[in-house]
Amino acid sequence: MQVLLLKYGEIALKGLNRAKFENLLIRNIRAVLAKCAQPLGIDAQKFVIEREQSAMTLWYNGDSDNENDAGFELDNVIPALSKVFGISVINSAVRTDKDIEKIKEAALQYIAPVLQGKKSFGVAGKRSDKTFALTSPEIARIIGDVLFENHNCNVDNIDNIGDIKVDLKKPEVLVTVEIRLNGAFIHSSEIRARGAGGMPVGSSGTGLLLLSGGIDSPIAGYMTARRGMKIAAVHFTSEPYTSEASREKVIRLAKILEDYAGAIKFYTVSLTEIQENIKKYCDNDYTTIIMRRFMMQIAEKIAHKYYYDCLITGESLGQVASQTIQAIHATNEGITMPILRPCIGLDKYQIIEIAEQIGTYETSIEPYDDCCAIFTPKHPVTRPKLHKVLEEEARINQSGMSKSDLIDRAIAEIVKPLR
Image (cartoon, rainbow, N blue to C red; front, side, top):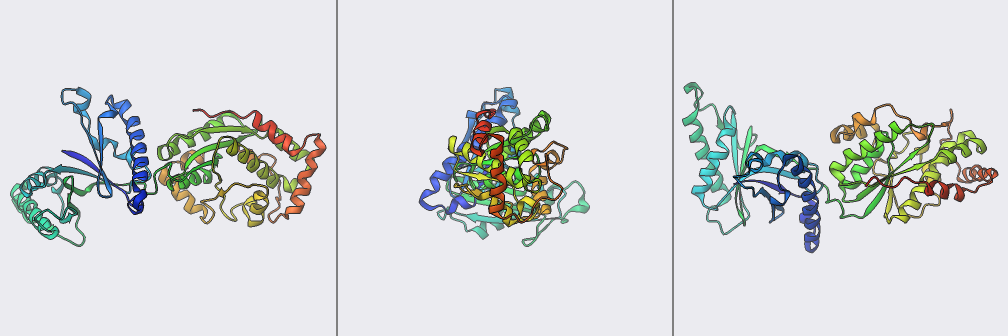
C-alpha cells in the first residue's frame, strides 16, 4: 500500500508533552488535506493518519469503485504538506508486512522502476522494531542484492548490463527500508520532499503582525509561524493617498502566508487623520518615527482587544532610518506587550532569499502606495532622542484632539477581519 511517511524533528524532543504537539500537527495536516480534497472531488475524511515513533503515516482509504477516488494519487498532496510547519521530511513510500519475502517483492515493484537509467544506488536499513529477526545491515544487503540482480536482468540494452553500481557513500539514489512497529516501509531519495520544519502552528501562542506590502513583514510572519505562533495581521492605509489596489495586494500576501500559517485574520486601519495631524503640527524630520509610534500603539490596542499575545514587525536593524536602535527604542516606548522582530539580524539579501523561497517576493515587489511613504521627510532623524520625540508628538494636541483621541478614532473605524 502506498503511504506518505511524515517525519518530524523537534516534536520528538518534547517528552511527556509530545502528544500535545502531535495533536496540533494532525489538526493542521487535516486542514490542509481538506483544502486539497475539495477541488479533487474526494472525501477528506478518507485520509487516515497514524502516529508512531517520531513520524506519522498518511494514506487514502478510498473506494476503488469511485471514479475520483480511483484516479487520486497520494503524491499530489505532497506540495501542500511540505508547507505544514512541524513536518521535516515527507517520504512517498510503500508499506508492507514485516516479512523479508514481502519486503523484497515490494522493493521490486516500487523501487526497481526508479533505478532505470541511474548510475548508482545504495540501500540503508533502519530497524526501530528490534523484534525483527534481521539486523539493519542484513536488511540492506538482501534488498540491495535483489534490486541489483533485477536491474541487470531487465535492462533493454545488453551493453548496459552492470552500468549501475552499488555506492554506499554518495549514491545517485538512496533506498531506505525501515522496519517500524506498524509495518515495513520502503522509500527512495528520488521520491521525497523536504518539509517546512519548525513547530506546529498554534503551539506557541498568538501574535498580531504589522503587515505592509513590502518584502520584510511577510517574512517576519512566516518566521514566527514557523516557530508555532498563530498569526493575525493588521494593515495600515492612508486613503486617499493610498489605493484599494494596494490593500488588495497586501491581502494577496496574507493569502500566500496562509499556505504555511493557516487562516489569517486581517484587520485594516486608516492612518490618514493621524498622518495629516503629524504633518501639520510636528517637526518634519520626526514624522516617520512619530507615525511608527502611533502604529505600534494602535496595534497593541487591537491585540489586547482580540487577545493576541504579542506584536510582530519586519524591522531589520539599521536597514532604514526608523530601524536604528535609537528609533526602535523610541518606537517601543509605552508598549507593554512583547514585540517580536524575527528579521532583526538579517540583511536584505537574506530576507529576499526567504521571500523567493516561500513565494511572496514577486508580489511584494509590485508597485504599491505605502502609507509609510506618505509625507516621508527628505532627511528623517536617524538617532532620535526620546524626550525630543515626545515633545514633538505632544504638539498634536494643538489640533484640539489628544493622541489617545486620535488612536481611539482610528480603532473605531477598523475594518474587521475578512474571515
